[in-house]
Length: 353
Image (cartoon, rainbow, N blue to C red):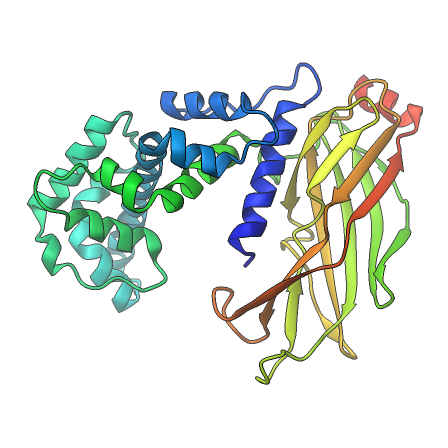
Protein backbone atom coordinates (compact mmCIF):
# COMPACT_ATOMS: atom_id res chain seq x y z
CA UNK A 1 0.00 0.00 0.00
CA UNK A 2 2.99 2.30 0.38
CA UNK A 3 5.29 3.47 -2.38
CA UNK A 4 8.65 2.02 -3.31
CA UNK A 5 10.38 5.15 -2.00
CA UNK A 6 8.77 4.73 1.43
CA UNK A 7 9.57 1.01 1.46
CA UNK A 8 13.21 1.74 0.67
CA UNK A 9 13.40 4.38 3.39
CA UNK A 10 12.23 1.80 5.93
CA UNK A 11 14.75 -0.78 4.66
CA UNK A 12 17.61 1.72 5.06
CA UNK A 13 16.48 2.37 8.63
CA UNK A 14 16.38 -1.39 9.33
CA UNK A 15 19.97 -1.71 8.09
CA UNK A 16 21.17 1.27 10.10
CA UNK A 17 19.53 -0.13 13.21
CA UNK A 18 21.18 -3.53 12.66
CA UNK A 19 24.59 -1.83 12.51
CA UNK A 20 24.08 -0.06 15.83
CA UNK A 21 22.22 -2.55 18.03
CA UNK A 22 23.10 -2.89 21.72
CA UNK A 23 26.05 -5.24 22.36
CA UNK A 24 25.15 -8.92 22.44
CA UNK A 25 22.06 -8.60 20.24
CA UNK A 26 21.55 -11.69 18.08
CA UNK A 27 19.76 -11.51 14.71
CA UNK A 28 17.82 -14.40 13.23
CA UNK A 29 20.21 -16.74 11.39
CA UNK A 30 19.53 -16.98 7.66
CA UNK A 31 19.25 -20.48 6.20
CA UNK A 32 21.15 -19.93 2.96
CA UNK A 33 24.90 -19.27 2.85
CA UNK A 34 24.67 -16.65 0.10
CA UNK A 35 21.95 -14.78 1.99
CA UNK A 36 24.11 -14.68 5.12
CA UNK A 37 26.99 -13.43 2.98
CA UNK A 38 24.87 -10.69 1.46
CA UNK A 39 23.53 -9.55 4.83
CA UNK A 40 27.06 -9.40 6.26
CA UNK A 41 28.20 -7.27 3.32
CA UNK A 42 25.20 -4.95 3.66
CA UNK A 43 25.86 -4.50 7.37
CA UNK A 44 29.47 -3.65 6.58
CA UNK A 45 28.51 -0.71 4.36
CA UNK A 46 28.68 2.86 5.70
CA UNK A 47 25.33 4.32 6.74
CA UNK A 48 25.37 6.84 3.88
CA UNK A 49 25.62 4.18 1.12
CA UNK A 50 22.30 3.48 -0.62
CA UNK A 51 21.86 -0.32 -0.34
CA UNK A 52 19.83 -0.78 -3.52
CA UNK A 53 22.30 1.13 -5.68
CA UNK A 54 25.14 -0.88 -4.18
CA UNK A 55 23.30 -4.16 -4.81
CA UNK A 56 22.63 -3.31 -8.45
CA UNK A 57 26.19 -2.13 -9.10
CA UNK A 58 28.19 -4.64 -7.05
CA UNK A 59 26.08 -7.77 -6.39
CA UNK A 60 23.63 -7.91 -9.27
CA UNK A 61 23.92 -11.63 -9.99
CA UNK A 62 23.80 -12.57 -6.31
CA UNK A 63 20.64 -10.48 -5.92
CA UNK A 64 19.21 -12.19 -9.02
CA UNK A 65 19.93 -15.64 -7.56
CA UNK A 66 18.32 -14.84 -4.20
CA UNK A 67 15.29 -13.24 -5.82
CA UNK A 68 14.78 -16.01 -8.38
CA UNK A 69 15.09 -18.69 -5.71
CA UNK A 70 12.41 -16.99 -3.65
CA UNK A 71 10.15 -16.62 -6.69
CA UNK A 72 10.45 -20.33 -7.49
CA UNK A 73 9.76 -21.39 -3.90
CA UNK A 74 6.77 -19.07 -3.53
CA UNK A 75 5.27 -20.19 -6.83
CA UNK A 76 5.88 -23.82 -5.81
CA UNK A 77 3.78 -23.28 -2.70
CA UNK A 78 1.07 -21.52 -4.70
CA UNK A 79 0.93 -24.32 -7.29
CA UNK A 80 0.83 -26.93 -4.53
CA UNK A 81 -1.93 -25.06 -2.70
CA UNK A 82 -4.03 -24.68 -5.86
CA UNK A 83 -3.68 -28.38 -6.74
CA UNK A 84 -4.60 -29.39 -3.18
CA UNK A 85 -7.64 -27.12 -3.21
CA UNK A 86 -8.91 -28.69 -6.44
CA UNK A 87 -8.28 -32.20 -5.11
CA UNK A 88 -10.39 -31.37 -2.04
CA UNK A 89 -13.20 -29.99 -4.15
CA UNK A 90 -12.57 -26.35 -3.29
CA UNK A 91 -12.72 -23.69 -5.97
CA UNK A 92 -9.69 -21.93 -7.41
CA UNK A 93 -10.09 -18.74 -9.49
CA UNK A 94 -9.86 -19.66 -13.16
CA UNK A 95 -7.19 -17.05 -13.95
CA UNK A 96 -5.08 -18.28 -11.05
CA UNK A 97 -5.26 -21.93 -12.10
CA UNK A 98 -4.63 -21.23 -15.80
CA UNK A 99 -1.48 -19.34 -14.81
CA UNK A 100 -0.24 -21.93 -12.31
CA UNK A 101 -1.17 -25.20 -14.05
CA UNK A 102 1.80 -25.15 -16.49
CA UNK A 103 4.09 -24.80 -13.48
CA UNK A 104 3.06 -28.15 -12.00
CA UNK A 105 6.70 -29.40 -11.75
CA UNK A 106 7.33 -26.67 -9.18
CA UNK A 107 4.92 -28.42 -6.81
CA UNK A 108 7.58 -30.99 -6.05
CA UNK A 109 9.97 -28.37 -4.75
CA UNK A 110 7.76 -27.97 -1.68
CA UNK A 111 9.88 -26.25 0.95
CA UNK A 112 13.17 -27.80 -0.15
CA UNK A 113 15.98 -25.29 -0.57
CA UNK A 114 17.67 -24.36 -3.83
CA UNK A 115 21.15 -23.80 -2.41
CA UNK A 116 23.03 -22.58 -5.45
CA UNK A 117 22.80 -21.18 -8.96
CA UNK A 118 23.23 -24.63 -10.52
CA UNK A 119 20.09 -26.00 -8.89
CA UNK A 120 18.12 -22.87 -9.79
CA UNK A 121 19.15 -23.26 -13.44
CA UNK A 122 18.28 -26.97 -13.37
CA UNK A 123 14.84 -26.17 -12.00
CA UNK A 124 14.23 -23.69 -14.81
CA UNK A 125 15.32 -26.29 -17.36
CA UNK A 126 12.86 -28.75 -15.83
CA UNK A 127 10.05 -26.26 -16.34
CA UNK A 128 11.07 -25.66 -19.96
CA UNK A 129 11.14 -29.39 -20.63
CA UNK A 130 7.78 -30.06 -18.97
CA UNK A 131 5.86 -27.32 -20.77
CA UNK A 132 6.03 -25.04 -23.77
CA UNK A 133 6.88 -21.65 -22.28
CA UNK A 134 5.60 -19.87 -25.40
CA UNK A 135 2.14 -21.33 -24.74
CA UNK A 136 1.93 -20.24 -21.14
CA UNK A 137 -1.29 -18.28 -20.56
CA UNK A 138 -0.94 -14.60 -19.85
CA UNK A 139 -0.54 -14.18 -16.12
CA UNK A 140 -2.49 -11.54 -14.19
CA UNK A 141 -0.97 -8.16 -14.88
CA UNK A 142 -0.36 -7.40 -11.21
CA UNK A 143 1.37 -10.76 -10.59
CA UNK A 144 4.95 -9.58 -11.07
CA UNK A 145 6.60 -12.80 -9.92
CA UNK A 146 4.62 -15.04 -12.26
CA UNK A 147 5.11 -12.64 -15.16
CA UNK A 148 8.84 -12.52 -14.52
CA UNK A 149 9.13 -16.32 -14.46
CA UNK A 150 7.19 -16.53 -17.73
CA UNK A 151 9.63 -14.06 -19.31
CA UNK A 152 12.61 -16.10 -18.08
CA UNK A 153 11.20 -19.34 -19.52
CA UNK A 154 10.79 -17.61 -22.88
CA UNK A 155 14.44 -16.57 -23.13
CA UNK A 156 16.38 -18.02 -26.09
CA UNK A 157 18.02 -21.40 -25.52
CA UNK A 158 21.41 -21.01 -23.85
CA UNK A 159 20.60 -17.67 -22.20
CA UNK A 160 21.79 -17.24 -18.63
CA UNK A 161 18.69 -16.30 -16.59
CA UNK A 162 20.72 -14.78 -13.76
CA UNK A 163 22.69 -12.54 -16.11
CA UNK A 164 19.44 -11.51 -17.85
CA UNK A 165 17.77 -10.71 -14.54
CA UNK A 166 20.74 -8.67 -13.30
CA UNK A 167 21.00 -6.67 -16.51
CA UNK A 168 17.34 -6.32 -17.52
CA UNK A 169 15.49 -6.43 -14.18
CA UNK A 170 18.25 -5.32 -11.85
CA UNK A 171 16.21 -2.88 -9.77
CA UNK A 172 13.36 -5.35 -9.30
CA UNK A 173 15.51 -8.27 -8.15
CA UNK A 174 17.63 -5.99 -5.94
CA UNK A 175 14.51 -4.78 -4.15
CA UNK A 176 13.24 -8.34 -3.73
CA UNK A 177 16.57 -9.69 -2.47
CA UNK A 178 17.03 -6.81 -0.04
CA UNK A 179 13.50 -7.15 1.30
CA UNK A 180 13.69 -10.92 1.72
CA UNK A 181 17.12 -10.90 3.38
CA UNK A 182 16.21 -8.09 5.77
CA UNK A 183 12.87 -9.51 6.87
CA UNK A 184 14.33 -13.00 7.27
CA UNK A 185 16.85 -11.55 9.75
CA UNK A 186 14.26 -9.58 11.72
CA UNK A 187 12.54 -11.11 14.75
CA UNK A 188 8.85 -11.91 14.13
CA UNK A 189 6.66 -8.82 14.47
CA UNK A 190 4.14 -10.77 16.55
CA UNK A 191 6.66 -12.42 18.89
CA UNK A 192 5.91 -11.99 22.61
CA UNK A 193 7.95 -9.42 24.50
CA UNK A 194 9.04 -12.04 27.03
CA UNK A 195 8.66 -12.23 30.78
CA UNK A 196 5.88 -10.20 32.40
CA UNK A 197 5.94 -6.90 30.50
CA UNK A 198 5.79 -3.70 32.54
CA UNK A 199 3.45 -1.04 31.15
CA UNK A 200 3.63 2.73 31.04
CA UNK A 201 0.67 4.87 29.97
CA UNK A 202 2.11 8.18 28.69
CA UNK A 203 -1.26 9.38 27.35
CA UNK A 204 0.45 12.16 25.44
CA UNK A 205 -0.97 13.77 22.30
CA UNK A 206 1.20 15.29 19.59
CA UNK A 207 -0.10 17.59 16.86
CA UNK A 208 1.32 17.13 13.39
CA UNK A 209 -1.02 19.85 12.20
CA UNK A 210 -3.94 21.64 13.83
CA UNK A 211 -6.35 18.86 12.79
CA UNK A 212 -3.95 15.86 12.86
CA UNK A 213 -3.25 14.28 16.23
CA UNK A 214 -1.04 11.40 17.25
CA UNK A 215 -1.71 9.95 20.69
CA UNK A 216 0.82 7.80 22.53
CA UNK A 217 -1.24 5.21 24.40
CA UNK A 218 1.07 2.65 26.00
CA UNK A 219 4.67 1.51 26.27
CA UNK A 220 5.28 -2.13 27.24
CA UNK A 221 8.75 -3.29 28.35
CA UNK A 222 9.53 -7.00 28.23
CA UNK A 223 12.54 -9.24 28.71
CA UNK A 224 13.16 -9.60 24.94
CA UNK A 225 11.80 -6.33 23.55
CA UNK A 226 9.37 -3.46 24.01
CA UNK A 227 6.28 -2.16 22.23
CA UNK A 228 4.55 1.16 21.66
CA UNK A 229 0.85 1.59 20.88
CA UNK A 230 -0.45 4.78 19.29
CA UNK A 231 -3.46 6.06 17.45
CA UNK A 232 -3.63 8.68 14.73
CA UNK A 233 -6.64 10.95 14.17
CA UNK A 234 -7.06 13.12 11.10
CA UNK A 235 -9.88 14.39 8.90
CA UNK A 236 -10.98 12.50 5.82
CA UNK A 237 -10.58 14.37 2.55
CA UNK A 238 -12.18 14.09 -0.85
CA UNK A 239 -9.77 12.90 -3.58
CA UNK A 240 -8.23 15.61 -5.77
CA UNK A 241 -9.15 13.59 -8.88
CA UNK A 242 -12.84 14.43 -8.57
CA UNK A 243 -13.76 10.76 -8.10
CA UNK A 244 -16.25 9.67 -5.49
CA UNK A 245 -15.07 8.37 -2.14
CA UNK A 246 -12.58 9.49 0.48
CA UNK A 247 -8.81 9.64 0.60
CA UNK A 248 -7.99 6.76 2.96
CA UNK A 249 -4.64 7.44 4.67
CA UNK A 250 -2.17 5.00 6.13
CA UNK A 251 0.80 5.76 8.40
CA UNK A 252 3.50 3.06 8.57
CA UNK A 253 4.55 4.21 12.03
CA UNK A 254 7.78 5.36 13.64
CA UNK A 255 10.81 4.31 11.62
CA UNK A 256 13.68 4.94 14.06
CA UNK A 257 14.18 4.22 17.76
CA UNK A 258 17.39 5.27 19.54
CA UNK A 259 18.46 5.50 23.17
CA UNK A 260 20.59 7.94 25.13
CA UNK A 261 23.62 5.62 24.87
CA UNK A 262 23.66 5.79 21.06
CA UNK A 263 22.17 2.36 20.34
CA UNK A 264 19.36 1.70 17.90
CA UNK A 265 16.48 -0.77 17.98
CA UNK A 266 14.66 -2.69 15.25
CA UNK A 267 11.05 -1.64 14.89
CA UNK A 268 8.18 -3.37 13.09
CA UNK A 269 4.47 -2.87 12.71
CA UNK A 270 2.59 -5.53 14.67
CA UNK A 271 -1.00 -6.58 15.12
CA UNK A 272 -3.31 -4.54 17.24
CA UNK A 273 -6.35 -6.41 18.50
CA UNK A 274 -6.06 -8.92 15.66
CA UNK A 275 -5.51 -6.46 12.80
CA UNK A 276 -2.64 -4.37 11.56
CA UNK A 277 -4.75 -1.27 12.01
CA UNK A 278 -8.26 -0.64 13.31
CA UNK A 279 -10.13 2.05 11.43
CA UNK A 280 -13.57 3.61 11.43
CA UNK A 281 -15.25 6.80 10.28
CA UNK A 282 -17.22 9.24 12.37
CA UNK A 283 -18.18 12.65 11.08
CA UNK A 284 -15.43 12.71 8.51
CA UNK A 285 -12.58 11.65 10.83
CA UNK A 286 -10.21 8.78 10.28
CA UNK A 287 -8.45 6.92 13.09
CA UNK A 288 -5.67 4.40 12.84
CA UNK A 289 -4.50 2.32 15.79
CA UNK A 290 -1.03 0.90 15.51
CA UNK A 291 1.20 -1.21 17.72
CA UNK A 292 4.92 -1.40 16.95
CA UNK A 293 7.31 -3.91 18.50
CA UNK A 294 10.97 -3.10 19.08
CA UNK A 295 13.93 -5.44 19.51
CA UNK A 296 15.98 -6.09 21.62
CA UNK A 297 14.98 -5.15 25.18
CA UNK A 298 16.08 -1.77 26.49
CA UNK A 299 19.81 -1.86 27.14
CA UNK A 300 20.93 -1.65 30.81
CA UNK A 301 21.54 1.92 31.94
CA UNK A 302 19.27 3.48 29.31
CA UNK A 303 17.09 6.27 30.65
CA UNK A 304 15.61 7.77 27.47
CA UNK A 305 14.17 6.34 24.24
CA UNK A 306 13.62 8.54 21.19
CA UNK A 307 11.01 7.57 18.58
CA UNK A 308 11.29 9.34 15.22
CA UNK A 309 9.63 9.64 11.84
CA UNK A 310 11.74 11.83 9.56
CA UNK A 311 9.40 13.01 8.15
CA UNK A 312 5.91 11.70 8.94
CA UNK A 313 4.65 10.41 5.58
CA UNK A 314 1.11 9.25 4.91
CA UNK A 315 0.17 6.97 2.02
CA UNK A 316 -3.29 7.31 0.49
CA UNK A 317 -5.75 5.33 -1.58
CA UNK A 318 -9.42 5.77 -2.39
CA UNK A 319 -11.99 4.10 -0.16
CA UNK A 320 -13.78 1.17 -1.69
CA UNK A 321 -10.80 0.27 -3.87
CA UNK A 322 -8.45 -2.73 -3.61
CA UNK A 323 -5.17 -2.03 -1.83
CA UNK A 324 -3.26 -2.30 -5.11
CA UNK A 325 -5.43 0.13 -7.06
CA UNK A 326 -5.40 3.87 -7.47
CA UNK A 327 -2.85 4.87 -4.90
CA UNK A 328 -2.74 8.62 -4.48
CA UNK A 329 0.39 10.72 -3.95
CA UNK A 330 1.92 10.51 -0.50
CA UNK A 331 2.08 13.55 1.74
CA UNK A 332 4.65 14.54 4.36
CA UNK A 333 3.92 16.57 7.50
CA UNK A 334 7.37 17.39 8.81
CA UNK A 335 9.63 15.57 11.26
CA UNK A 336 8.22 13.97 14.38
CA UNK A 337 10.27 13.07 17.44
CA UNK A 338 8.93 11.82 20.77
CA UNK A 339 11.01 10.94 23.82
CA UNK A 340 10.09 8.50 26.57
CA UNK A 341 11.75 8.36 29.96
CA UNK A 342 12.53 4.82 31.09
CA UNK A 343 12.09 4.65 34.87
CA UNK A 344 14.87 2.66 36.58
CA UNK A 345 12.37 0.41 38.31
CA UNK A 346 11.01 -0.75 34.94
CA UNK A 347 14.43 -1.59 33.55
CA UNK A 348 15.34 -3.43 36.74
CA UNK A 349 12.07 -5.37 36.86
CA UNK A 350 12.25 -6.42 33.22
CA UNK A 351 15.86 -7.61 33.43
CA UNK A 352 15.07 -9.60 36.58
CA UNK A 353 12.67 -11.95 34.79
